[in-house]
Length: 156
Image (cartoon, rainbow, N blue to C red; front, side):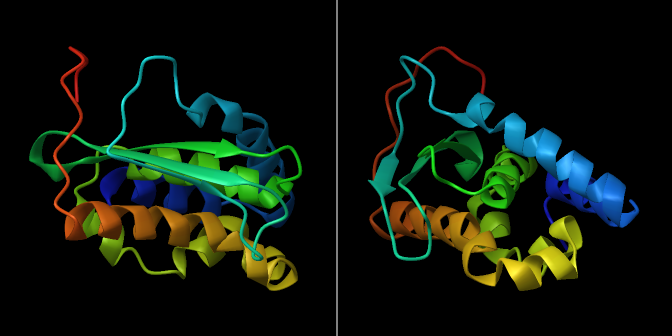
């Protein structure tokens, strides 16, 4: 149903009691900076903007590697909420290396399985935001059939 790496994270989160799930979400939120673009990285699409759905600027950076596999980086402004930061980390880890078609096929309900229905209900406007932006970037990349970035010598 989900790309394998994302499925492993869904399984991890959904098997935790609520208090442990929230602690793990905070851990992922605190690690969100690890998913920012690194110096020298080249992307097919970089979309940085502030939308009404989010409290601050969010940048989605995508590179399609060999076989159309997605590699995401995300930049988050300082006012982005903790749950959105956590979800960003989960998405970057869970979707890394997944084929574009699999990324586009991930249903929204995975957010409930990661964050829990109560948190999703409280933050319903923002928890899906980054995920929708990532899917939008993949669609834009595929629709415009953009050439890939120059090779960097890094493994895909």
